[in-house]
Image (cartoon, rainbow, N blue to C red):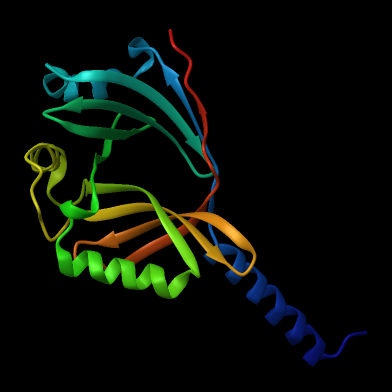
Length: 197
């Protein structure tokens, strides 16, 4: 029979494993192109006005390790948009592709300091300005995003190839408007299946 202390040791080790496993989230992503007819009707109705005069309009279904979502990607007024919906066609967020110059200097400095301290070397692969549907609701979120407003509620999502001791890995890092880290997770290179219909 095991002693009580042995049971406590096993329980502690198990808790550490579960906690560590839960903290190092991985993102497995599979995105494939779909027809407009396969996109949720509610989502299409919501963005139909935004798609007028848009270029390179493409629709995707995305499956990752936690959920299924739908995404409309297009270029409008020289900006590249990505609008994401859940599997029921409910708006989740709007993202705009950006460059470092689009981020306030103080915020960007804080981000690069974090990256410099976290990795031996790093390369930013993609940057997006992120408008989430929160207290402001769907209509206001869309309006804010399409006016490209700099608000305290916006986030910045960076895809970063970072080198630690065991080589390069890819990370998805979410920063708040001031450049503070909110979330980081390993992101395996997505399996994009761009099938043209």
